[in-house]
Length: 270
Length: 352
Image (cartoon, rainbow over the protein chains, first blue to last red):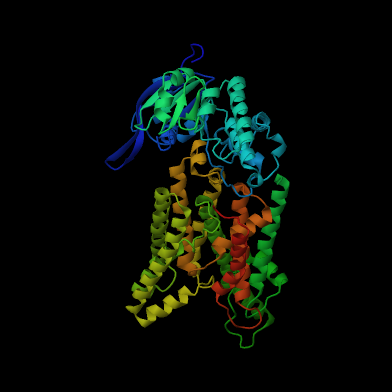
């Protein structure tokens, strides 16, 4: 963690999963950590380990199985279980894997929707709102697209527009669920720079689930790793790599993690 | 799409509704010139009380003729046109709300079986209590109950399975199921009840009793206003429920609002006008094509106008002006509606 600021995000004995009736299914086990402003946290784990469930719980989209999620303000004013959807919308924004399919909406209309928590019941934009929309489009380099119909964009362009929309929401926290899953390599690299830029210039904290361990090792300030049992480990990327946790969680058969090179290799075909 | 173009589009659609409204009143077994209608409407408030044909005179005078025409306009044609305009608007608005909520361009009150739910409710009342005939508060209430049940089931299905295909198919199947229940019910009903049921089930905006209009119109008008208040929520829903929730939409409240509004509107129209198909699914697409937007603050008023225009046009066409015959209303709406649905399918404007 950088500096000694008060935590922007705090998890206390947080266990996640699904509950239907009396039956509950635990996905990730009790986990306690805290994060301050201006960090990129990558949440990695094998397929089906519960990355998305943990992310959805921390972002208040689903209820925790047990434990608490606190945003800035701690127990007094940051307990997300006591917040309405409207209050949460001031605290965090969300970027999902799959781009939406919003019919005939233009790029600027979609980014304007990000201002929803700040506008009146009709969604009418004020001068402040319009300025925020314009800035958000510029940060991601989507300004030239603003009059295009969203549906006609490439996947990479769509994802940048959705990030602009999240920025327009103007929240200290942004959660990303596999933002690069549908992107080609150049778009992924562009996304990496964009995300670090958002952290460095805006001081925002980004929590990102990803399959891309290389990306996580290279760009994250903190890593959370979920193993196949649902135990969550947190730490600095280098420590987690050197400590052998990445190797233990992800190695399978002949595929092993080389601590020195920080990459996976095949023992049989080096 | 600039704000001005939207406003122009809305104004033009509004004018179209007015024009079709006047043509609808003018056409029928007695053709009444538009000029006379305008004159009668303007005088409506002052002369409504005196609109009685003279009793003692054996030869109709020019004045009697005028009074007769005024009676036709004010007591038959005007309420009928109002019923068509509001009924069509309500079905179209239901279609829009459902298409937005289910994020499926093929959703509509008739496709999803909501109208069948309303139909079964209405059928039970009509067949079991033949005295009431069609219309009346009891049919209305039963019909709304039926559509509420179907909508609630559909929305819980979509919540559980998160699949639009399953929901759409479930809606279609529910429609068949409810329809066959009605078929069984008919088998056990009296001839008189069946006659009034068949009369109702043909679908028509012309059977509404004037006293029922006093419930029908305010109920629908209130629903229109309530739907308009949801326009921002509807816009957020275009990005999907998760995004909507993340931007502060109270998704539970929105879900209940959609259930309630579509059920009340579909129920009311089905109870008093019978099942009217295709306006609900087609009108939102006509409207989007005309206004080139998906913003609900424009689409909701737009679709109300489009639905009203479609219903008025279909009603006018079904009366085959000048021939004295009637075509089934649903054949006319289907002929207008199916090409639109096919176009939507072919355009690939469809959920993956």
